[in-house]
Image (cartoon, rainbow, N blue to C red; front, side):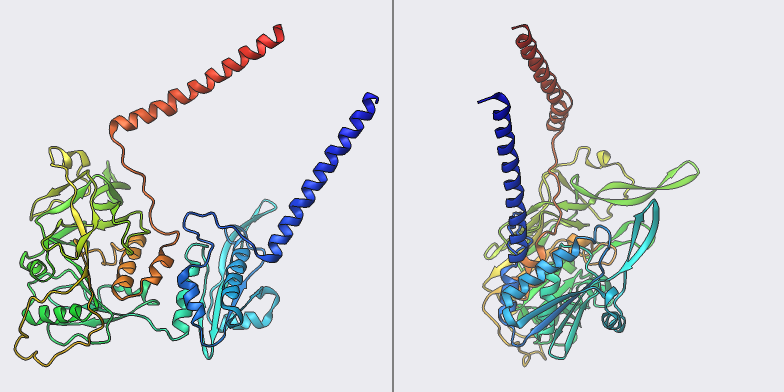
Length: 519
């Protein structure tokens, strides 16, 4: 056979193999698109319906309709949202069957849809678009409307893929009449009450029904699922303690925030000391002691401060050791299982006095110390090195969680409270103590802190199925702190060793090729 014939046969086989490969790829893509087959390789399986969502869909008593209003032609990052939302709603339909119907509508081509969105006060998304060397603003819709019987719920703007399943499932739970947990916020003895925790109520009002409670003057409502005591500044009386005892012994959850100082952020960053007697009841009633001092940690968050520069004041971000970046969390507990880290402001060290049923939930890093006081020096402009010069580094307990049998401290009811009772929901007592009274204040409650608090409230109120769903894809993933020796070692590797290895490999390859040419 001639050489030209052999080459012709080889070319034909190569083209045939290429065409078969392209045809196979196209067929695979079409089949996957039609059958909605997907493989979820993300760490937390973000694109697979959770068991919580499946449970909610399987309990539907009547059909629910989900309509997504998405304007076509939106630029990134909204351009790919349509396909993601379609896939998500398709998964809801496949799990719920005939009880979950969905549709995706482009409002720009549907006048009736525009009328519906206008009536619901759904805002438009404004996105800057660059086309033909010109910048312009394009408006569109990225909204979801849920209809169940005669009820309607709206997700006005879908900003990202993260958290969409949680939002949808929460709305379904709400619209189908499952109800929201009722959370009481204590307003007594100087605590941060209902009126002061505006940001918490604003961000979590869709998921919880918050009410104001004063156990020092009135009985605690029996329909509450959990109770928040945020930063007592005075010693509580016996009626207050007795009512809290009866509340937690009835099987309801209790969240207590307590410490030695509360933030005072009106004009500058400062703290005001809390009376020591305001925290003593925790040792007797819950077996947790608030130790003296404030915790400061080199592994810290950053804040913006004004620094003088000649005649001007410049705003700069500085590491603030009293804003703890806690990464030592209990990975086995439902509250913190999915959290990689949480920021805790102005924390006081805790100690577990009675260990039965109680265990650490959060701890500071090995690079933390304790500043004794009062008074407490929390000036953000003081250098970090100066603060830790000669300090004794040690881990400090920041949060304690308890689950187990209850313990009576006040055996007899105070005078006038003998007839007060609380319906028993269970024998298991749950409570959480966090060593900071200021975490829920509007200026200090950030995204990760909010997730930690909401996980805690879900666990305390028996809504554990929502914790995993909310935490998927959320939370910080902070880098570990390295010692100076390790840091310098890695710098040497990346700056010298790795380039040297590349150069050596190049020289070796050059010598091999040179020998071949000579041969």
